[in-house]
Length: 264
Image (cartoon, rainbow, N blue to C red; front, side, top):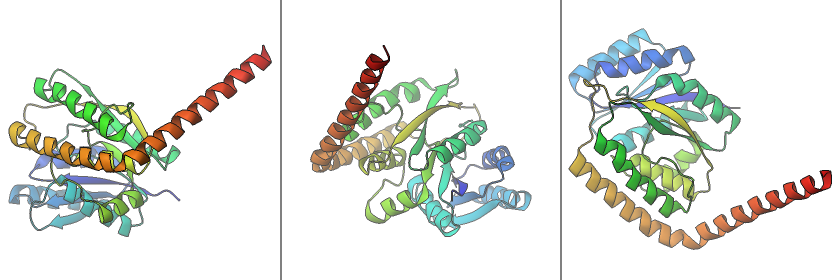
């Protein structure tokens, strides 16, 4: 039985997190708020959220450890609650929360897949953020041997809880800005199917972002270096899986062709 919920990692997002919860509350699903060592202002905002929204589930980490570890803690909590799938959405309000229901419905229809998003930007997107993703997405295709990967960095995704929980138990996953890339690649390595859909992404002038171009691009580069090493170790398995998939697709194509010829 599918039982869904939401995870929101929060770090010094103040009132922005409250707006995200307000937009998600009509879904009627538990919303796990992972406080990743936020400041007192954000903690006060979170207390107001808990008082106003009974479905908001508090989970506090003692110190800031990064989005990856906050999400991992949220996955553990989701598993304790008996949730099977969770939508992860950022607390800064950049993701269109109105797409949450569609993504959750897609997960219900494809429970064994990772439901991923790719961004539809408006004019507010910084040039470097938009075009820098091209390099990251290219490397994601290389280290997974999956050329259909559209987006590797956007965190608006619906994850199968047990699969992710087991991944955290056996693998190191980057705790900070490399997290979204790292977990996507590693789930690909397990053979998990990926399904992509668009989501609107905005960058409001008063928005809160923890992205630091120099520091975080270096960290992302190191993440890909580590993933390249992991890909080389898994290369025989990845190639075999790719060949099987291509053979299966070829077989389906030939079968359709024979059916068409028979009808004609």
